[in-house]
Length: 337
Image (spheres, rainbow, N blue to C red):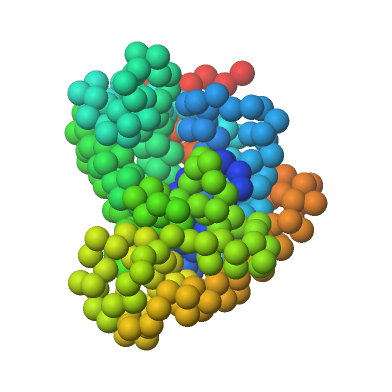
């Protein structure tokens, strides 16, 4: 019987924002009380597009700091970076041989990221869903928290697990992983455009709340956030075709662990200037302590490296054991010097 184990990976993009916190990290903090959790900084995924080496190292440390500052306990959970456990890459190659080209061709994220000039995209960008499957299945994870944009990749992980189990007559070796999807809150969108996901790649810094923003800047960004002239409705149907309004109400709901209809019940009929004042207070109360702790942790790089090293050793113990079993199932032999 497999343990109930969560695996999740976050790319080291640096300068994490409110969307990252509400869309992933806040959930990670909650999950650590229910599951055995493995949280990975997926630096190998990041290099599917060019990364400046100095910036990549810095971003890895900042992501670790953001995890810890947000409340993920490095003593209770495994926190490590993907490149430090070589078994991820080894299993990814095996899955390159298990997965079918047709499966890769159906991946919509590749089409979106590669754009019109897909012949110029890296091979890694096309097959990285196989590496994602390896990340998860290497630890025989039973659950993975995912957003809407990753559901297709998790389906691929399930298909790979089933095919491996069938091909090698090893029923139930890999668990068929279950998604953990937050149904109460949608993904967090840009403060300037309700049709775009909140992202550090957007030109305007006013499109997002960064985890390291101070209270004055947060307040300014919330006040400038795009809304409309209509008052806040009392029912969800009143938010139809009001994407920016829906986004701000979703942020407030998520920060306060409320459902959308509860927030509308509290603020229905009020104007957005009143609501934005309350929203600003909530964001500042949640984000500023995290940002202050991130800044403090980044001054102690040795502490961050020590936690990465400890986490990597714990992860590798599991990875080596499982990869040895996988090799044996496949008839491969790994001789040690």
